[in-house]
Image (cartoon, rainbow, N blue to C red; front, side, top):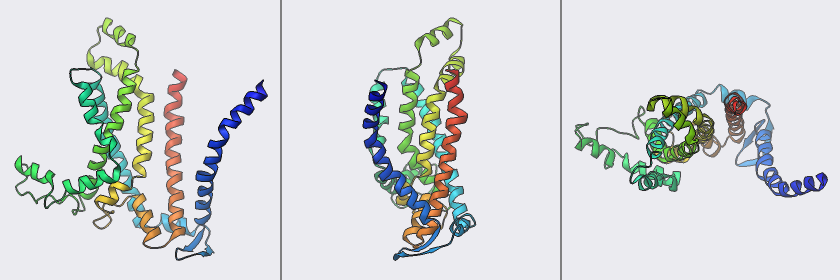
Length: 296
């Protein structure tokens, strides 16, 4: 019976395993292999083995380090704001007030828009010549000239502009996950807190938030990885400019491969990037999620 069940499990797992082998592991092995070669993109068959030279060149490149720094700022700022806003919205919608269903549907609408389309929308809205953002700020008398703030052409604002677009697009995801976590908390815990005379803040601090940690950890991990590999929004809005002020790792690797034709160096950067993401994921799983699972 056990052998039969094992064979049945293997049969169901085989298609997914084959898919992973073909579309994940094999390209990954090719990526690692190419990272040790100097490859001319116009003549991919002419390869020159250079060992770790691509990795050394990438890690010693000021532009790569600047892109990595911008990526960290992008992740910390965007995901942090999304988590705070998502938590606030989830707490408000969990009270099930009149019209909450309509508001929930309205807030989820950005999730139905592709990142590329979202980037185009915000590119028009943030335009310093005819964008609605500057027009609203001007009408509210926050700025004195409707062309005063150059969101996409000012090096100090370009990265912030991409973060604004990302926050608008993905805050609904964070809200939805946290709302599901709040609704999954047993009502008996709130009843016990109410009997003990706990205030709303104490109930949130000692009941809601601790119960949300496993769900919030998963949501944060997904969003950190997603924000780290963001490409569409940044490329549509600024293409990493002006200069390199909003360059992130994904856009820089794309330029290294397609514009500069350095497939080997781009592969080395991608491997470094994957290692960083795997390290972050492992930290969340081992250090954050495991203690919560043990407590449960």
